[in-house]
Length: 310
Image 1 (tube, rainbow, N blue to C red):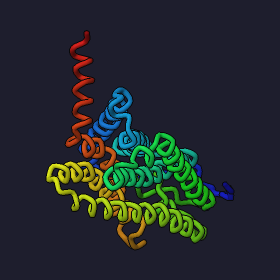
Image 2: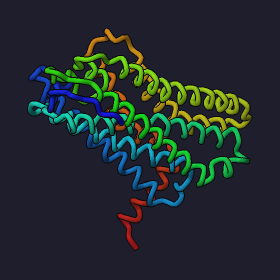
Image 3: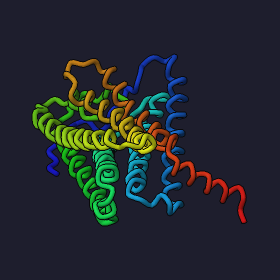
Image 4: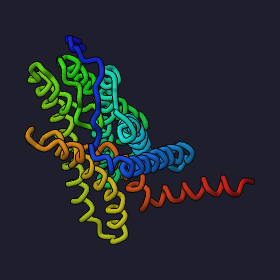
């Protein structure tokens, strides 16, 4: 990573979600509640998958990594956001770049984990006889390694391009987090190279997963419609429905955020990022567990073991 930054700015001020004083306390408790639910939900799902051998399958291996990613990147964003509701939110240049790096790392990871989960469902529904070979332990591990490598490369590229920006005097970020668009507005030098990096990496990390998801679910839908058993169709739709809901929420918000016109209001940016940085990680554990019989059975076993020890 080339560091050509000669910025005179050593710290930034995050303006937060809103400047209206009467909303600060209600919003603090609202987002604190969302964060607690997100941590408990994702951590609970991680523990449940680890402790139940019945859930040691490719589908839950990817769900484990999704919950881990959601837990991490909501923890990168929300605590710093909560600070802004109770006092002036000052963040050093180094802390800002660190937050940006981990935000990019985990958000890119989520793109590819969701894609891997779609491929897993395609293999399970469309190629059931080859499923054990197609989604072997080795293949699953390699897919997850590739996910984290893509996240690391993308995060390094985005953070490196921002580090090359020069911030002369302006240090007030009109946002609740260190994200690329609000930082770009503070730069007193050309941001064309940063815009190119964003265009390439966001394009790759959104378009490739989206195409993979579209093809996977087109083939899955075609296969489901050919299932003669109503029970079989219902089970297949139930299995995929939760994933489609999570994918739609995440990719819809990300695509709107990074492919919108540059003239779009800042408040729209803030609201949009809330959906995939804060609301999404809270909803995912519920989306994947409410109608999931395997998770219900595993949860009952754990509770029985805790409440009725031998």
